Length: 288
Image (cartoon, rainbow, N blue to C red; front, side, top):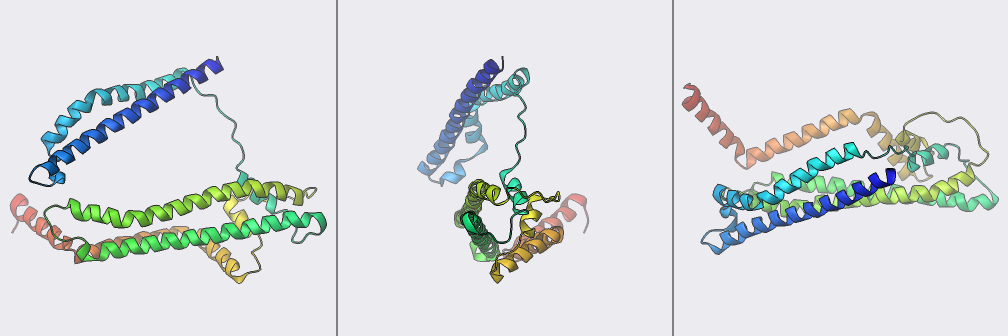
């Protein structure tokens, strides 16, 4: 019965995936048709997205959307009829690794020296990669804030889509690059954890000192820092960030809010909001 339910879920998942791709392709084709039709006219394609044009294309895509919606709802029902067996939670490799590292000796000799060097080298590589990722994230954030704060990037034009698309074109590559680097480092850290786990198991074989039950991140930070002063500083900085993370998050959100307010003042948004507020008070409420 379990094998049959697994097969049914697999087949239905494949069919739902195919229908999702078909629906997405149809919607993309209809949007492109509106845009190309608008460019063929006397005005730009972006102005072709009127209520009538969009509604007409949505009616064409309505059968595919309805079939896809019914299949999604049917998937929920199917998963209730043929529930997936609950898998046992496996311990996280990185958490297990950081727990075992608490047992690692500070120095080794003989055949264990190779394992010790591999673990230390992997630790060094991961810390360097995370430092590079942090620099890229900070750089992308600074670039984004600077771009938003420059009034010339948001000129007063009738077609507001142009400055928005220009912002996406200029900002998104930096954000995507920083995200890709962080994702790559995280993947490498997972692969490295499996590699280190074998070596750490050899280094801690026979050691039975008790381990405190702490968070995996804190266990990592409490490990002895490298002899380099730079990594010792990075370790202390990360500990400080974890300890005061709520305060740092509030300050960061406040700085972003202030940055947007300043950008709004320079690009004229404050005057527009003030004008609308006056209009509401004088025309709608009747004050003035």
